[in-house]
Length: 344
Image (cartoon, rainbow, N blue to C red; front, top):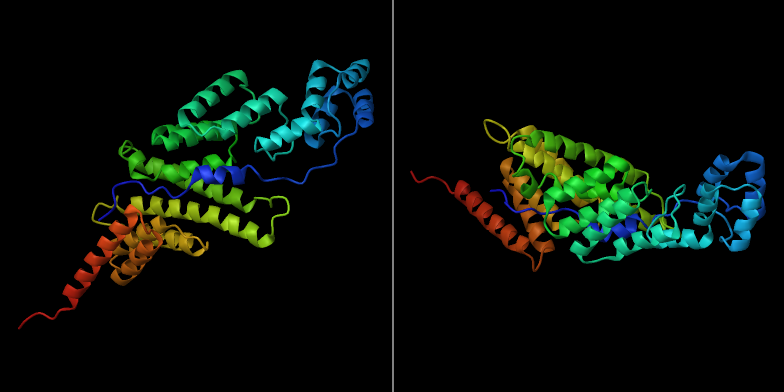
């Protein structure tokens, strides 16, 4: 018997700070003389592009602005140079950004930092809505919607989690935070109960998002002086959550068979959950529980008992332990009955 409440596979709030702490190797910042020289020789458009990518090694001051204006700098140039300075970049980094080619004004960065640090979900939602109105073209609006989705996840508003993740991904299709959240929610009972009419469509979309997430995880970069082993461990933990969600997709599909559980989908679910629990040294008890469900539906009683037992061991003090223990008890009873010889 399937558990009817959602067992979300990813702690998104915990992941968010790690995901946005990534740093790309940055090119050498431009000194003031180089900025003015390039402005004069190559024009505003090229300079804006270069300072956005490289940053500058100086902060904007009234004296610097005078020099830029004297070199025929436009308002756009002054804004771009101001956003590329060390203080502005530091503010962006504090906001959790490690993306080259994206600069924020000091005010924009400050507002985004407030969103990122807000723990109250209702306040976070209001802050994001204000941010979207104030900065409709912000390069970090996709990330802001990620935090709005996360706030709705805390409130249990699963439909809104999906809706805001989709808004986020429309702006930035490789936003890993949003990809992780949406795949964690879409295959779950709370979401699918309102999508019986298009369940397969929703599961197909979830599977596509999961594949996109795995590609992004492969492309992650190390954080600063992060050791190779720690980097590999972090990537494995992210991937384990995605494989667990893919297991849920196939487990859901297995129950859509007209004549009983779809064996092919059960095998796929078993493979994904096995990958989820074996690729990280901190497997999720919920993945073991779902693996037990898949084995049980597939008639693999010994494997199911082992998976439920492991789920129980890893879920001390949680409701999952009670469910897992009950499953083990029932399966052992079934196994004992089938082993008892019939009386002549």
